[in-house]
Picture 1 (cartoon, rainbow, N blue to C red):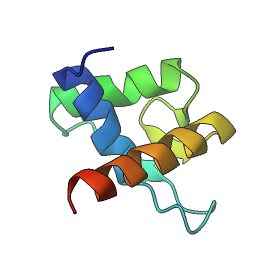
Picture 2 (cartoon, rainbow, N blue to C red):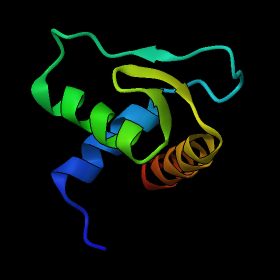
Picture 3 (cartoon, one colour):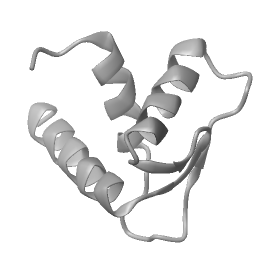
Length: 77
């Protein structure tokens, strides 16, 4: 699957989650850029996050966030 900006926007949201706790979520405000709001909606539609505006990671979302953060760590090293 080729990389595109939509995937990049979704990865950027997943990278913001704190994986050291399950008690911390994200809130995407209505004033955020439209690409961020749309990326959050896509993650919600894919059952990776609990709310269309962020919320918490689902079990599948946590795995995706772990992989996304690992990938960014490797690429940025």
